[in-house]
Image (cartoon, rainbow, N blue to C red; front, side, top):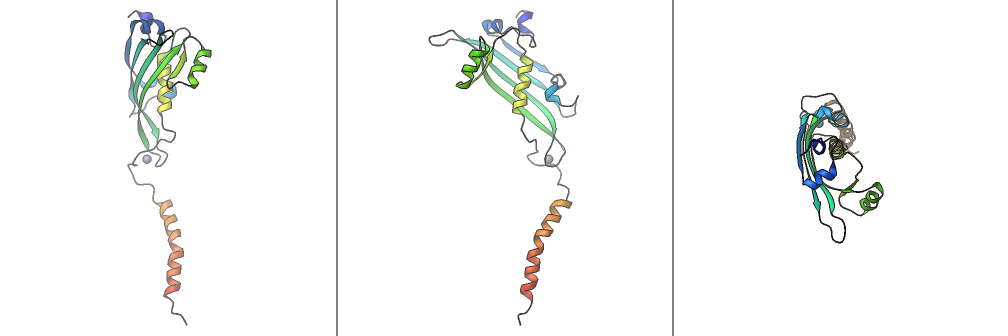
Amino acid sequence: MKNRASDPRRLDVAAAVAEGATLQGTAPLAGFERLAERPSSAGDAPVQWSAHFERRPARGGAPELRLHLQADARVMRECQRCLQPVALDLNVNRHLRFVADEQTAAALDADSEDDVLALSGPFDLLSLIEDELLLALPLVPMHSQCPQPLPAAEPDAAAEEAAHPFAALAALKREPSP
Ligand SMILES: [Zn+2]
């Protein structure tokens, strides 16, 4: 491929589609500012991605310009249960479609299963990859099983309090009736 078409930050989508290009790359997480959150952390893994462009014939119209995007990354967040770091594996597997302008994109996006993007000048593929990875983040990051037991104080105190009424009731029941 020519350089103009293969720079993922300034991609010539029309050329990539015409060539049926498949681009692949590995990029350090630190390059994705919105995703990395912190400059770097021990558990992070680089973003691995691949993008396959193709032109697909469409019945009774111009061929569709399509992109199949796959990306994997591992990011560190704080577990909302135990407040320890949790590694989150993110996987993206999306089919997208390029159209000529924003108006067409908006009209199609409503009733299409695929994401629809407007073609306008050089395309920032890595920014799209970051968008998709951000969408793959869980709203509430959490271990499926927290590595350490939670600090005992609060749950235990609550449990003891809950036990008291029954203990009092039991004590009453044990009192001999007159
Ligand atoms: Zn946890």
